[in-house]
Amino acid sequence: MGVYPTRKALAIAEEQELDLVEISPNANPPVAKVMDYKKFLYEQKKRDKVLKSKATKVVVKEIRFGPNTDDHDYEFKKKHGEKFLKEGAKLKAYVFFKGRSIVFKEQGEILLLRLAQDLEELGKVEQMPKLEGKRMTMFISPKKSK
Image (cartoon, rainbow, N blue to C red):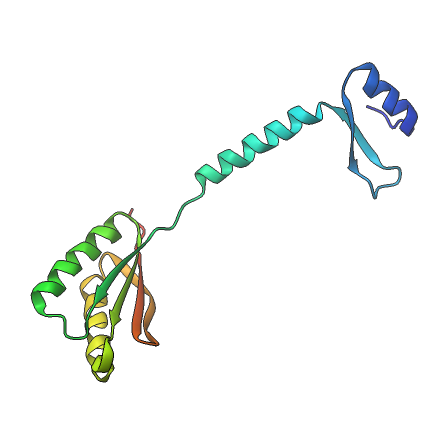
């Protein structure tokens, strides 16, 4: 289409029973297009929905340990961690220190590092063990499967 003065463009849009949509108002002269605006909005929404459905959703699964977790419980929770990483979820492993058990923070760190070492073929450590209040947290993200 050519460049029309505003009134002529409006007349053309009304004649075709469509809308005159301003595309670039800062241009000289302003750029406008004759189109069905409702249909344009509908298709824009549809495109956005398709893009949103293709976006990956990050799932974070948590595993909680105590500072004095015994071997059987550790193995049990490690198996859950393996399952979560195989499913493609991020793993948040944390040691919760109750009451005065905060004196065992070295044991908690050793426990988390042991878990990271046991799961190293399935995932990589995203954040090393870090003490935040009464929790020592570590994140493990799954390795991309080929």
